[in-house]
Length: 105
Image 1 (spheres, one colour):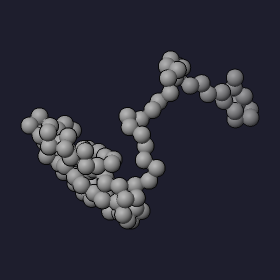
Image 2: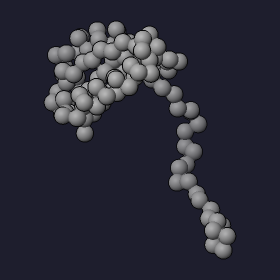
Image 3: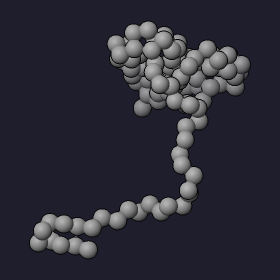
Image 4: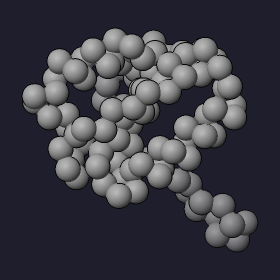
């Protein structure tokens, strides 16, 4: 329905209701980052490290008791962990409460 005189337009969504299962995260969400260890995961692109440095600084301002750890030995310009790092990566994950991932594009 369109009423151009009043500037009103009917807008239809292109999305269909195909899946009745509500979205949910892969892991339960943390209620706070205070006192938590945050894993900073980034690829090796040039902008990834500066981006993560700024993010870490801002998170430290908001959550002063949060701790940070990073892992960056990823394949160049990819977002995958090298196969030979699998065990190291899984150990790193055990020591964090949450992970922030960055692609430096």
